[in-house]
Amino acid sequence: MFFYFDFANYFTLLRLALREQGRTRRRLLRRLLIRVPLVALFHAVCFFLDGIFFPRLHRLEVRAPVFIVGHPRSGTTLLHRLMCGDHERFSYFMLYELWFPSLIQKKTIRFIARLDERLGDPLARRIRAWEARKFKATQGMHTMGLTLPEEDDFVLTPSCASGWWMVMLPYLDEMDFYYIDEPPPARRRRLMAHYRECVKRQLYLNGAGRTHLSKNPVFCGRIESLLEAFPDARIVVAMRHPYETLPSSLKLMKNAWKYRGWDEARIQRNLDNLAAKSFHMIRYPLEVLARHPETRQVVVDYHDLVAEPKRTVEQLYAQLDLPVTPAFAATLIEEQSQAKKHKTSHTYSLSEFGLDDARIRSELADQFARFAWEVPAVAPAAGVNAGVHTD
Image (cartoon, rainbow, N blue to C red; front, side, top):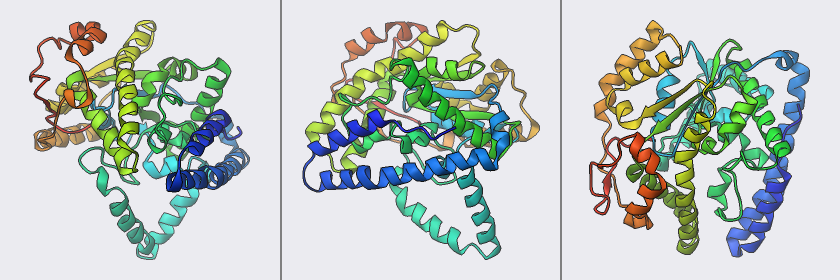
């Protein structure tokens, strides 16, 4: 298959970049006019060569993948990384593998890593030092690392189809990387076919007999597309009280945009847009799954997950008809012992982001009833203590 590139998104990004002024404009244009085309061309060549050097790719099937979705800060990362500990069963993307989606690229990097190890790790030491500097700011909010499991959506960044571009160029009112179920079917299917090819390459690398495991909050807007591309997919939805998830996720994005130097007025407009989108992220996965009772589906409560990770994951496995191996059972026991050690004092206020308690209850009335959210543990006007701080 040829490498997918979203030219419509690319030219929109270019048009928006031209609106900027000064250093911001120059920085964005350098990225879009030089770096993006060169990187996409490199990936396109490697993708094409994959089919020649690894002909078994054409016959490889993606069977019953597991997709973890949910509003940001609802426990999706915690659950994903717990399940990634089931090494005998699951295949998943590590961050560096998302940056290099081609099979040729992945195998070359692993070959270089083995060679470096024989030479005493001189290259690895330099990379680890760079990694510590690069991802220092992510510690405590969403810890990142080159060899940590990460969101599949990042693999679409070189194609100009990833939600990451919302951080780089915040025009949420003019650009959409979320409502993938809504674009014309042909465009949506091309995107999902490319994503499927990326997953196939990762499975080829890790073992075709494994099950792909994915975690993506932004995939809340493409549940129908996932089920169309992967009819036997299993969906896990993480749920957490909106008084906790909404201000926490908005704070995360606010910090990301401030870090990149965007002005307060721009940040506020995008936060307002993101807040409105948040209601859809909470409602939509459950609405779609209600229309697909044939799909294996599980809803995981955030507070159960952080309080009793072993029991919660074991129940999830039972609902997905997955046996817990002895090795993974030992991993869960260790995680259970660590569960109460990861605390935080982070507090978020609904009023800080203009979130109205009455509007939240009105927009999410069905969810408040279904998940017994009617009596919050804290007063929303005073702020929300996030408790265990993980997404």
